[in-house]
Length: 332
Image 1 (cartoon, rainbow, N blue to C red):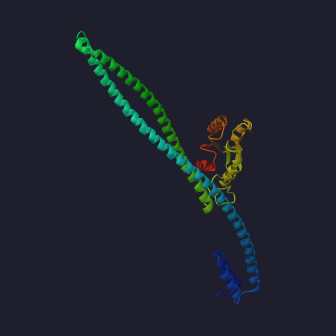
Image 2: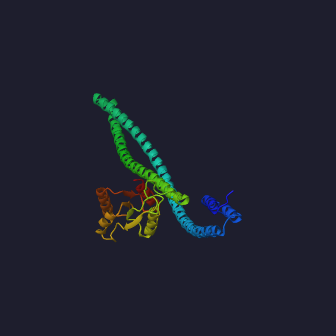
């Protein structure tokens, strides 16, 4: 049994560090040999710990509220992107059905083409036989109807050749249309893959906020007060182009990734002379191909290549494309 203040205080500190504050304080207060001075000193420690706990509780509560708001916003964005993806998937299936119909039609034309070729060959052979027979018995009256047969065969041959020419022209047009639809199919398939990757990136970021995952594992400032933020680790991201009404949302997403956001509209509203200066200040550059001028995109690409900076072309100016682009920057 402990009998001195030093022994009692040592046991109290052990309980305090293990989180057993209630049982430890009860043991102190009920110990028959504890001094008033030790009780007052330990009570002071307990009182200050109470202030720290209340402050930490309110801070944690605010952080949870902020994270819940971010999760709600990201869920709304994810839902909208999923609806867009499903709409484009329906269009893709419609285009695929039309392509199948055109392919069947082309197969029919090919078979008709082959039939007409064989028919023309047969007509040419009949005409050759009639012509040979006409030359051999041209003076015989009994063969007087053969020239008429030859003329008839020539007319049929000409009609078949004309029909074949029209069918060939139709086949060429159908072939071009089928090739265009195949190209559109390849484009839609690529777009489908990119959208799936964007949704994965957006879901990953959503899970990070829900689970409060650790930031960049390779950062030397991880788990310290110097940590600048999650994933991007304080890098400056330049967004070239995009929709002006979406700029606040672009900024929020980049900052949620732990980066510093700067923007250039990629068009005529901002002087072209400003873009190179912003590119020099940026650590990475994002550019949506559907909402940026050709000149601005080329300028950003050249300067990033020259300075070996990450340059990411995004499929669109949507938030899901931005999530995927930021994920690719983090992985570089």
